Image (tube, rainbow, N blue to C red; front, side, top):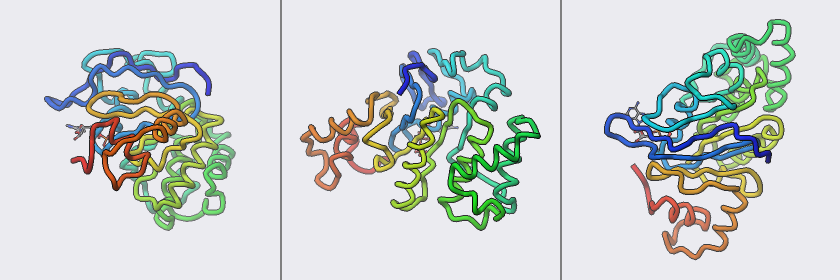
Length: 256
Ligand SMILES: Nc1ncnc2c1ncn2[C@@H]1O[C@H](COP(=O)(O)OP(=O)(O)OP(=O)(O)O)[C@@H](O)[C@H]1O
């Protein structure tokens, strides 16, 4: 994992009205794969919206790709970042290939390169053989993969994926994790999840959000070690991984 900071937050605070979401959060994210982990409502989507300039921090500084977020133009954002929103809505009637091509065109990829870029993006996510099908003919996991294809088709420097595993069964979540690990060799990825099973504990980095703070920032391997070394009794039903998470986040049971 490289050390160049792609995302840097310095003492960032944000609230919706009286609801505090981030309190003086400082964190740096570099190359490779980073999992942004937090319970429902922890602020993962808000974190992405702040990066994208869709929300403005109340205080603090956010640098993205070496520039202060507010100063990046819409065009720069579209070209350099690939985003898969959590509530990924897609035109079901469109064919997979046409949809990804349309998204490439929106990101202002030169027309002459679109065909090749779409073919490459669909092959990368394992959808080459479904390119001619309508999106509403795909399974949930395939739709998410089409969502990733549209996010990376224009060759961005950074992929922001908001809960790409939502609604997927355990087998498909494992496949998604494998895909992200593979992709992260060529593009920096921040992937949010509330499911610890999604995190690759052999590689990559983790940022854990809870109580408006970053409660863990480090490699996921070190988090795994922490888990194995921990002797918590947070919940007898939780796996060791969940126990460590519950201890860090101070939550024992369902939130919200
Ligand atoms: N537009 C909004 N106005 C007011 N409160 C909001 C708004 N959007 C989010 N919130 C609140 O801010 C907090 C953080 O929400 P956010 O969607 O960022 O969390 P999350 O970690 O992405 O959650 P989830 O895993 O459920 O998607 C929650 O308490 C949520 O209810």
